[in-house]
Image 1 (cartoon, rainbow, N blue to C red):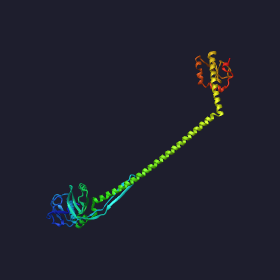
Image 2: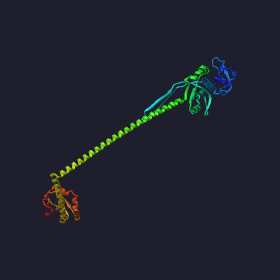
Image 3: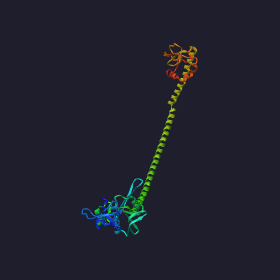
Image 4: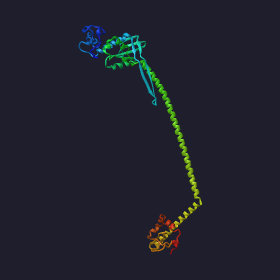
Length: 378
């Protein structure tokens, strides 16, 4: 709706509709916002009666008139339909379980004992203050399109119940219809809402405390359940550890017993006639190998001292014969033979060489008994 079409003009502090005064400037009305002269347009047949500015237009004339008319109506009637209230409060336990409750109250008709307009409270002006007993209700009438958030915040800071009437979308036909305007202002739930309700806030806080108490109780139960579960898991771990320890002990006992059995079996085996005979055989071979090493060294010495260090090594008994020998003088083997030569210095290390050489053992294996010992050879 154009702000040029002002529904109410002011004269002598009172508001009038255009059809309640003379036409044109004879209406002697001013704008309820800027207080400049208005012209009444009440002789048309196609448009509802309205006021317009004589000269320069202001933006707030329409809203100021609607707002003041609504305030006058509330103060005069001493009654106002209150909107319902509903709010859901919820909270979560530690485990994520949600507890939610809805608090609400129905719409009701407030019959006030007193109504005051334009009351200044801590730096902010309440459009209407309705009083009933010890209770007060602040009414904020909004007629302009733009929301006055600063005023709303200031009213909320007072800590009392605040009701908003939003008349910013009313058409001129409703505004100028006294019965329709009265119905909307006093009773229509679609144009009112709670900015703050003390009753609702108390209900919300009590419910929040009740929910918190239930949350605390559930959290305690959940904590106890978790502790029980932890204790049960700890007990199970301890039982498992004990079983593992017992298994390890059994395995260790079995290992020790098995080792002892193997040792006993080994010791028993070592004491058997077969084992004793085998040890005797090995000892005999060892001694024979040692004697064979001495025999080989003796033939090396003989080659150095008697044959100028040259000789023929029998490849069966590894004893040294005189060069060009066709048959070994110690084992009667006819070969093969390997020509060898030794220096005088070699004799000094011959014993040590035999201890690390396989020749003595091989000699005994291939020729267990010599036909002739080196000392007996001519």
